[in-house]
Image 1 (cartoon, rainbow, N blue to C red):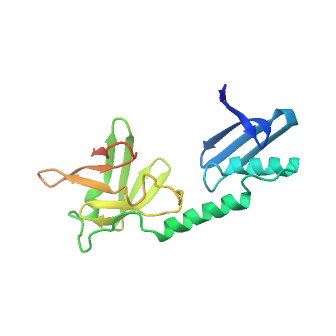
Image 2: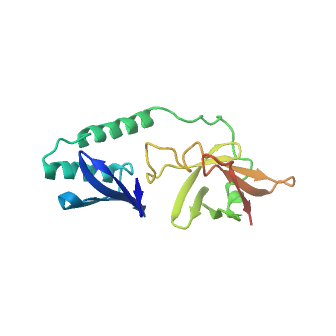
Image 3: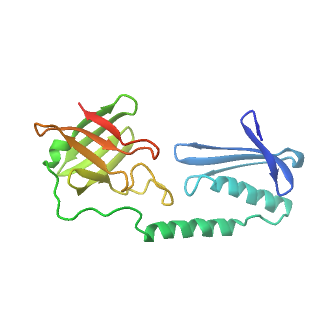
Amino acid sequence: MYAMGWFVDTYNGHSRIAHGGYLHDINSEVMIFSADRIGIVSFTNFGFPALARMINQHVFDLIMGLETVPSARNKLDEYGSENQGQSQTPRFSVPRKGHRPAHPAGDYAGRYDHPGYGRFEITHDGGLLTLKRNNLVLPLEHWHYDAWVAQDVGIFYLHARHAFDTSSRILFETSADGAIVAFSIPLEPAVAPIRFVKQ
């Protein structure tokens, strides 16, 4: 059930209204048990988005002397197992060895625009390429041919695919006269790779 932006249900036999949120890498969950005169708010800056909700439920169970369903320990162990599995299992294809970029690194630098998705900037410094968009700054490494990937800088979830993992290769496009004119990257799983044109 959904009521004026709040989710209405029962938890462990008690009526509640609740809603979660996400802003600037902070997950939140507000949970109100009006009949019990209890309100709980949690904020987290790591882990999966539902962690704040699970913390609220655990706190409510402790306050009320109820058995936690499921236990916080079980959920955290489950999350840890998922992350361990992701780190040990190669999910994506490997690059073809021995293939160098078709251009010197500096040729890839520039401003790249898309009318709907906005602007990326690729900078070149000391032989290294960096992808920039507002506060997002990702060093790039060569994958193979004219494909590059963002280096893992530890700002994305470990347990879920995202727009800058190694499956989202940045593929540069060269014109008939040999100039780099665009790059494409799959930013959304249900949409074809987005083409950003070099300005």
